[in-house]
Each structure stands twice: as C-alpha cells, then as structure tokens.
Length: 282
Ligand SMILES: [Zn+2]
Ligand SMILES: [Zn+2]
Image (cartoon, rainbow, N blue to C red; front, side, top):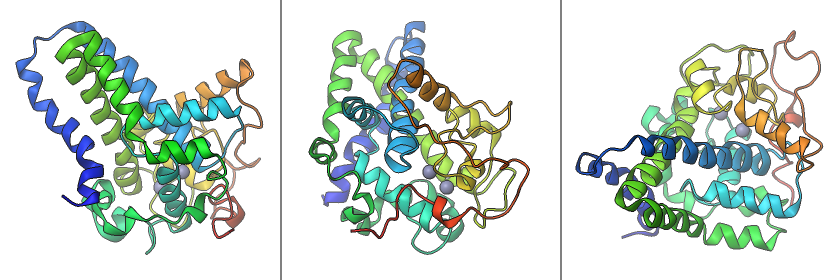
C-alpha cells in the first residue's frame, strides 16, 4: 500500500466501521456521546486548525496552542501543519489552479474528498507555515498526528465497549469529517454570496449551523483573518462564541475582527487580508 493509502487508512476505517452499527444494541447515551465528541473534535478543527493555525485570528498561550492542535488531531484530518498549509493555499488560489480542493476547477467529488488522494499532497511546502514550524512540539505532533486519535478511540472503547468506539468515536469522526469537507465542496457551489469575492465561496445556511460557524464561508473569504465568521445576528457562530469564552477566562487575546464597515461594502478582499501570513516568506 502506498504512503497515501496508509495515511488515509484510519479515516477509511472509521467510515467502514459504521457498517457495524446495526449489530450494536442502541442506547440513547450514545447520542450524548456523539453530541459531546462532535463538539470537541469540531472545535479542534474550526477554532484550532482553521481559525488559529491557518489564519492566526487570535493569540493564546503556547500550552493552549498545543491543546488546540491535539484536539484537532483527534478528528483524523491529519496534523495542524498539514491542514494549515493546504488551507492557506486554498485561500491564496481559491477556485483557481493551485487550489488544493476546488470543486469549481476539479469537480464536486474531487473538491470534497478526492483531493486527499492526490500524490503531490505528500510533500507539502513547509515554508507556507514558517510561523508554525518554529514550535518543535507542533512539528512533532504533525508527524505523529494519529496518536491523539488512537488515544481517544481507545478511551471510548475502554469506557463504552464497541458501542463507545463505533457510535462515540467513529460516528463522530465521520460526521465532523463530512461537514468540514462539505465546506470545501458545497460551501463553494451552493448558497448565496453576500460579497463578490472573485471565487465560488457561499454562505450556505445549513452548513453555517452544522459547521459551527465555518459554513458562513463567503463571509470568511471576504475577511479571512477575522475570528468571527457569522456577521449578521442570525448567522450563529459557535466557534466564535468559544473564542470569546476563551478570552473571558484569559486564554485568548488580540482577537481579529472583520474590517469596519464591511457589511455595507462589497468587492474583493484586500490582498493583504488573504491568509494569515505572506506565504512566500522564508
Ligand atoms: Zn473556501
Ligand atoms: Zn479559511
């Protein structure tokens, strides 16, 4: 099996594990497990991998930075550096050649999941995350990204037996995975565009709620470094509420906001506002 296949084996396995659901006696407690674990993994992705590591939209202590990275790794979407590299490239080349997962350029399925099997993703350019590779603990975790996932899966099995593993862990991973990657596919094809951002990003209301705020994707492409993705009162943004709660207890500061007057204006984003850092820097 190739290295790509091996690195995707855990993700493929959790999808296949769902076929075991009819053979496991149902308990309402499992739904509570799914609710709690999808919030935990989902926030690891939206607050950790996306808003913090990819866009540096707030600041946090180094220990909490590592905790966010660990939480994101439990969702089996590889490590924080790998995730941030591809996401920064997505913002730099949105729906143009060079975008790792554009449904507009390469088709819906490729933009959703097919891109994960692309060969050139094996050796991503670490210069894109030069601001993150200076932390050895992040580089280490990016190498052993499966470890937090195995530990959480093992804990689910230890506490809840096969039901805990299949419902609690596998079902939660699949839900978070499919919703996250639907933002890349559906979120670039279906839904209204509030801002003319020059690519296909949309504010899909279903994704807006399911992806804990990350589905207000057209807002996000308009102001990528903003920690807040829901701009209107009805655009519920649970991830931003979590960041505000972190601030309340002293664990987040310098929280970036959308540029003033953004809701009134239209047009393309300021080039300096695309991505978190100048990605060509050494
Ligand atoms: Zn996008
Ligand atoms: Zn983004």
